[in-house]
Amino acid sequence: MSGHRALVGLIGANIQRSLSPALHEDAFAAHAMRGHYHLMDVDVGARRSLGELLEGVRATGFLGVNVTFPYKEAVLPLLDEVSPEARQIGAVNTVTIDRDGRTQGYNTDRVGFRRSFEEGLGRASVEGQSVLLVGAGGAGRAVAFALLDLGAVRILIHDKDTARAGALVADLNAQLGQTRAGVETDPAVALARAAGVVNATPIGMTGFPGIPVPLQAVRAQHWVADVVYTPLETELIKAARAEGARVLGGSGMCVHQAAESFRLFTGLAADVPRMQRVFAEAAAAREQAMAASV
Image (cartoon, rainbow, N blue to C red; front, side, top):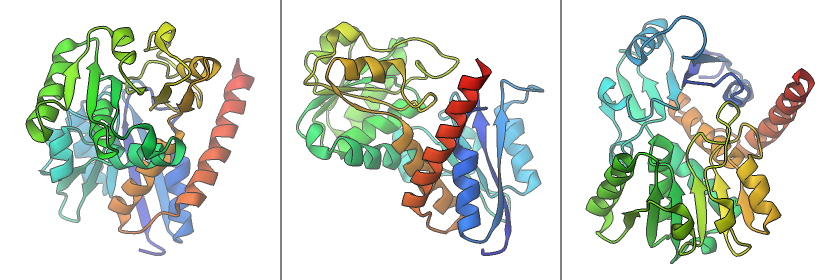
């Protein structure tokens, strides 16, 4: 595909500060391609349904799109095909579009979180342990499977929507064994039985203030991970570090899922170390711009 023009993008809410354009456009340039990554923020401009946006990118000749909050689950029935892994997870974050306009959904969040965790905290941090997962939406579903890939023996799932938490627990237990997951109504009590916690909700993201985990339950022996990377360090990550806990922000997951999405869009391998450098540079520029605007 060297020398070709390429168009991809992102559909979601509150995505104006996404670093995905920088990651993908540099990856295109590294392969001598002229590529553009277009943000389709449903909070900005004319309101369009998810179906309308998908039809628009299909008609415009996109190679594909990433899909983020709140559409990772809602997009499944709108696609022509869904990969077995994405079907198992019950969430899609990457949609490819072939030359005939057919759409296929994939999930790169699972591998993105898994690789980030291995790099940042190590498999030994979770192997043979129970883990508290806060958030049972699209991101939470991918993280749950990734944690089990990493060797967790049980996932304790808390969500303000207990029905959604129950649905994820039912899926995990049906597919992987009846003791692999359980619903938790009190995250503080659950964290006392867990090696660590992952926030897989938007809480803590710019525009979604708050801390999703009871900080009084965080101890120095815990690890704390967040899928949010806007800002780079959420209040949860800052507070957990102050308690002596090991922490993992969302930047690594962002880079690794982007690298896998790029491969699905183009058939080409992304240079992950280069993508990590681009992420760091773009994040620093974004943080500086945000500070200047205050």
